[in-house]
Image 1: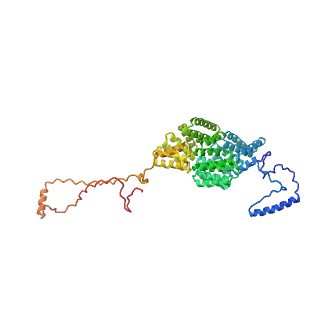
Image 2 (image 1 turned 30 degrees about the vertical axis):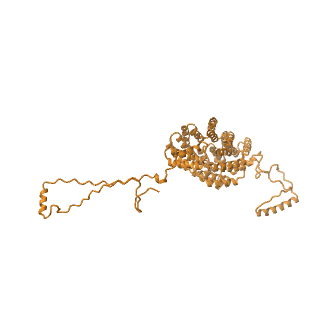
Image 3 (image 1 turned 45 degrees about the vertical axis):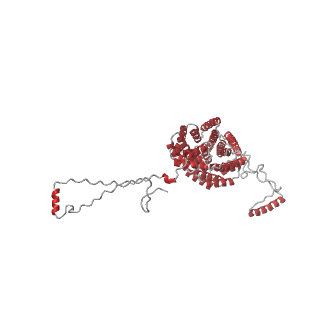
Amino acid sequence: MDAMPQQNPEPPPSTLPPEGATAVPPPPTSMRTTLRRAAFGAVAGAVLVAGAVVAVPDGDQEAGPPLPGPVARAEAAAAAGSPASLSDLTALIGDRQEWVDTHPSDAPSWAVLGTAYVEWGRRSADAAYYTRAEQALQRSLAARPGERGNAEAWVGLGALANARHDYLAAKKWGETVRARQPKNWTAYPVLIDAYNGLGEYAAAGRATQKFGSLRKGVPALARTADMYRGQGWREDALATAQEAADRATAPAEKAEALHRLGDLAWERGEPAEAVAQYEAALRTDGSHLASRAGRARALVALDRTDEALADYQTVTTKLPRPEYALELGELYESLSLDGDARTQYSELRKLLAQAKKAGVNESLTEARYEADHGDPAAAVELMRAEWSALHRSSAAADALGWALHRAGRSEEALLYAEKAVETGVRNASYTYHLGVIESALSQNGPARIHLEESVRTNPVFSPLAAPLAQAALDSLGEPAPGGPADMQPDPEPVPEPEPEKPEPAKPESPTSEAAKDDTATGGTSSGEASEPEAAKPEPAPARRQAPAGPAPSASPGTAASSPLP
């Protein structure tokens, strides 16, 4: 993928000679040095067999190859699928810019430059670099079309689409590369992000597994941990993320792994552990501003608001992502600093406008702001458009459901809030929203369950919403005593049989007297019948009304049912 420019000040030692080397062969070594090298080789071989190497400096030995410089380090990180430090990334961008100025038809170098622009724009929150990235990647495709083997540019366009939250376009680029080159591992991170953004979690899981089979090591472990986290498998996510952190070596890679551990601790409701992990990430790489934002979030939960405000102010200045601006505004509001909150929300609106102008879709953050602090109807419109564009992640479902509820459409909101929780992700905000919506619909039992889950998952998930979640739970009170039996419907009463009515007496006919005479002459007494009449059942006495209450217990083998215990 990488072209090696002639003026690269820091070439990888495996491809070019060390710095200062020329075409002139080195002078022959002395016999003394040769003997020393032979003896050292024998000793080293014996030690390697034993399982360890002890190196003793020798003044007569030639110096080894120089350590790789920033450009080589950035190239090595890209080749491994790991993040490069910002300083190394800057060096790589400068090197490629200088090279393509004099080699405008070098398609691989244009692709490397474009992909580096994408990464810089993502990690600096400067969307202007996305425009530069698109231009560089199109120059690469103009020099060599993707159909002629320029998969690097297609992968770069996929990464750019993900950075802009255009997940359908990212999916198209990733699947195009995979169809042509199924074993090209660089396509799979693009596909994983795209599938997750669209809510196609089964496809994301398959892509993660394929990526792990093609690219072992820390990048695969990190992606696998994220997959477990999205499925709600906390123990698996923690174990895999910890392994990634233990195996990471480069500072930028290590900081990213420690940051992931901080996020997992935060979502478990362990802010002290989260602070420790974020601070470890910052000690490893002080420029990892996402860890500073995470630390600010956790410090709020520990009531260390002054430190949290300082961290948030640093982050929103150096990494002005809209979600961080929203978090800071809500922190101000929770502290009753209404003027600061209004100023921060105004800054958020500016960031959202800038993102839209640069082609970055920030509808999720904008909808969250409008639902709670602005116009809920506008939030509904935003998220309706996202859902129609097949952006159906758990985050999108939650945002749409909450916007509908805030707009007074709780019945419609319930469907989307349930979808967000059903994905399996353990998010206290999602279960809080679902519980509030159920409570508004008088579904107190499910509402109590979800609100309890929210405060149990992370009782300090938001400085504004967490107290509201606890208040909503308290307002529901305790469930009715006696458990599920009290929630069964009363048994239907057994219908009473109607008493039989006596038949009315028939009027005697004119021949009745003659009939009596015939009976008398037949040797029978007047009080006996000649033939016995059919016996008529006497009317049953009226049954007393059974008292209201549960039906009597049925004996074994009968079909009668009784309430659950």
